[in-house]
Length: 505
Image 1 (cartoon, rainbow, N blue to C red):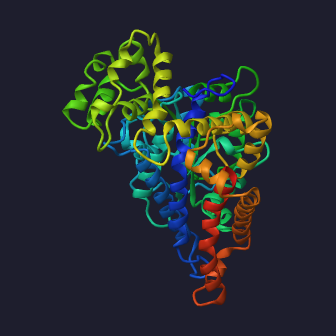
Image 2 (cartoon, rainbow, N blue to C red):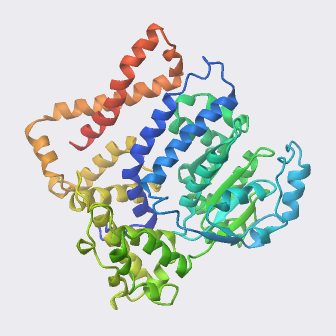
Image 3 (cartoon, rainbow, N blue to C red):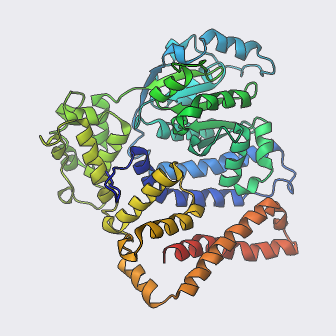
């Protein structure tokens, strides 16, 4: 577990975000590249349904890349099971049926779709969540689970499965983290439109049009990330925003959701017309099979023999390896990747060390070992070089923004504040030696300032083009098209290279 400079330990969520940050930039590039290649929707006379088709393709590229980075299909998705959630947390099943059958403005049920008879039929596992969603009369579902239970990766899998089965003209799934939504200041459609424009700049004003036409299927991840006092009101705002017949999926930690919908004081609230399921702990056979199947050969598989008998028992390691998060950390730490030798890795037998007295100790051990494992392959950075900067980013997220979402435009303020607090450069995180030499011997402060200005100016120009609908500059054969073709490449390069260089040199 990463330790801050003042000795406090980082929240589990902040540690997980740090891993995601380094993986997210390539995903954003792929998303932008996929969408920029689509023809201008207005110029081509495309309908909103066709725009939704293009958006679904871009979303698919985005989450396929994320799934590859997270090794979701390597060797296969870790099977997660679920049961129906406590009935008091949802509307009665009969209410869902009546709403879907006779609600004002509700479209008729899809041909050939058979609804479940009741919440008792909601139990399932693995890749059937996409089928389960279709069996809920309203196609609205809440997924509950404790920290590390696999909610987010299950949503990634749901998005990919929805896109794989999606017919042209159907709603495009949009997976967004709720952490950046302030329900007291923004209505849900307004915030969703902002997220659409942020992640897919080519949409422009068509983001609102897609939402108004019901061509977006919102998948809202992490209601528990919304501050506790406004979590219940946030559900009210969602209820106000859901259109008749609109499907919706939302995740939340179990305890936080229970406290929000059934508070000890005040009136309760439910997500209108939604069923709910709760993710279950992994069983011992599932964990054993997954860790062994992920091993590269008999020798690596044999390393798990001391641990397997303890899975599913009251032993500390058996209790710890019950969630997808902990199993994912264990595979990254102890299983070899292509080209690695098992003799060079830590031995999973250490997880049964008598010094690891309880589940929390095993989990802390896995957190401690993860960053070195993530950087053990030769690359640009070592764990020693990356560690201080990861700690800095985690502290910025946890104590400055209060959100797991990292916004690059906040970094100049964060860096300046860190320097002011620390007082002298010697206390700042150590830079890699090559970068330190580059800073001290080649660039003056004026050049560094120029890089920052160029990066920020580029961001402003790109944002301006978005505001005035930059797609019209791409009319084939026009002078504006040729100018934009010549400028957008250098502009993007300046944004991706100039700004980081100016900030960290």
